[in-house]
Image (cartoon, rainbow, N blue to C red; front, side):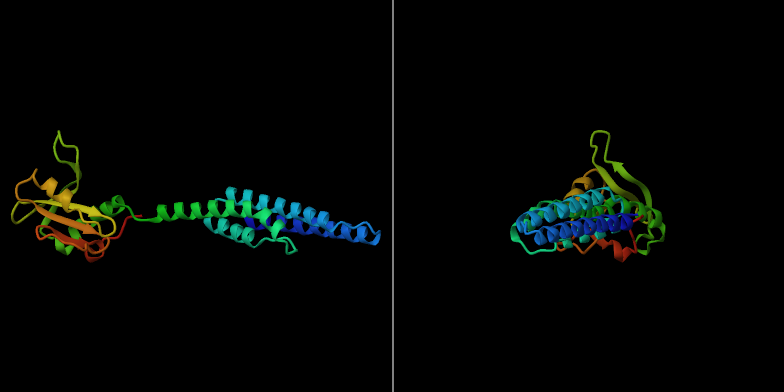
Amino acid sequence: MYQEKIERIMAETLRNAGLCGLHYEENQQSGNTDFELHKYTLDGIYASALGKLFSLLQSESSLEGKREIYSKIVSFRPPYDDEHLTSIHSAIIGQSAQYFMATVQDENSKNKPTEESYRQSLIQMFSTIKAFNRYVIVGAEMYLSQEDKDRVDVLAKCIDTDRDVIIELKLGDKSAHKQLRSYAVHYENPILINITESTVKRKRQDIIYFTFDELGVKPSL
């Protein structure tokens, strides 16, 4: 476990720092003191510990573990106040920050819903959506033609009028009006529907708008 590894690194560092302190005290008693050398020795001990923590940060698989290790790194300082020596550690701390932030961003992107996850959920619950109770699904990711390889997210039929229903899904509040209108020329008087995560700001009169929440559609996991 990463906690045990952190504890070992901390214990080893404290032990080495303590030995360094005893050695300095012995030198003081003998009249042979070099405080700058003592600080540089301590600096090496703490820099080595930071390097080990950074390696542990890179090898840890869980985000929780990475977060705890990273918090140790940024709070890990030698027991003296020296601007020059502290700056020596900043390179490792900076690398750790870049690595950890990149990991968090990557994890967040994995957890974000995708159009595909919304599409799967929409298809699964299509027949139960009240707003679509007069529609039946024809297919998903449908090519417009053999020549035109653009694909309609979801294609349905209106039971009452036999009109084609073109449904385009978008993340955020992005309007799909350009796609819908370009797809519409391949069908005769289709119904155009744009479904988004949040409300589209500029709506077109020839398009019907819904949000996923309004339809009760949650991204599939």
